[in-house]
Image (cartoon, rainbow, N blue to C red; front, side, top):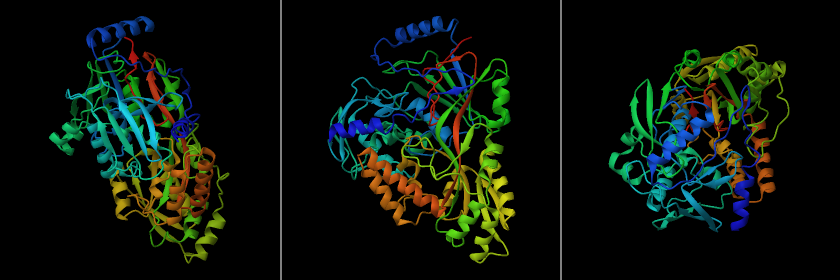
Length: 531
């Protein structure tokens, strides 16, 4: 059992991570474990070596631009990509993935599968939280239990058994799952698996902790200027290889044009989530490079599964048939995405193409007439405040108009749209999601009726297949189950997959060792920027 589970954890992640490509060469940093003693000397020596290799002095501040401001920086407090990008600099997980997608040690130096539902982790003995407290098994137990309870992480940790997760001793912890769970290691690598300080959370409370996070990672939280930026400082007591620079500044710029301007004007070193319409121009700009790679991300249109009107599969199919996805993807993404042909990203394990999307407006009109809406139909399309989703929404709105469907668009923040969905207040919405675990169970989790999914799931057949896939340790068997599940969801038209996205970044020529993360949550710990 032990050997089979460990091999599966590797197999499920191998082959899914593609290197960065496009307009620049990048290097994935290696991680070197060093003792916590002699911090100042180690940092100085590392900085000097990097500077010599780079051929110049190293800037002491790296500035990265995010597409928005996090609501908080608690690993269990949100589902925002901008928050996760901040969290990954501060928090660490028991295990992590290397550049090839293999599961490797992080805060846990080793582990073994005790039985089908229990993994025993042995923690490193040289890890300290940013508040000076030593990492212990109690912190891990507290983290797992908290992750299963908080709404923003509960769906990811739904398969974990909080009650049976126990500290064996100070450095040993048994992490339990409710049933055999083949993807357990993938889930533990997610940002929501970030280990928090039990003492810090209990002393501060959730709200304050979310604004003043305490982790074990290479950067320590320093300050937060609302609406402007978050500043992190190098953790000079870090157990691993320390950053070569002292300050990481994460700026919040919501307007895509202004994000591009920030790096063009020399006020930033790295820009995340640039507008795809700007990328070709930026790639030709002196001093800048565009970094692109395959991702776990997709955009999709989703219909509330318990909406009275959209509960008719013929209407959902008609809305799908009315969309020319080739045209939508080309218009919105250019060459930086491909049409999705299933219900999860093409990079996720067991992805099965359903073939080219069928575009047939006349068939769509016939289905609407058959379902009682020959004279037309009005729906509400609730969209997040993002140019990507709104661009897709406007195009879809016009295409639906051609078959007699009026889509009234409303907009709100992503968190508000998700909350509205959970309340049952969304008829339809368009989302862009990144499934950072690379696991099909994660990609399809919002269809689970036992989750707090904003799709308003109602289909028990999906639950059954999700459970079967989760428990299948045999890779071929597991893939077959998830292929069957994709077939089923696709032909129920609960979701219309729009695009398999790439991850895209813009960096300056002076940036080295930038890691192109398929989950679009890059760590900046190994980055260096020459003067």
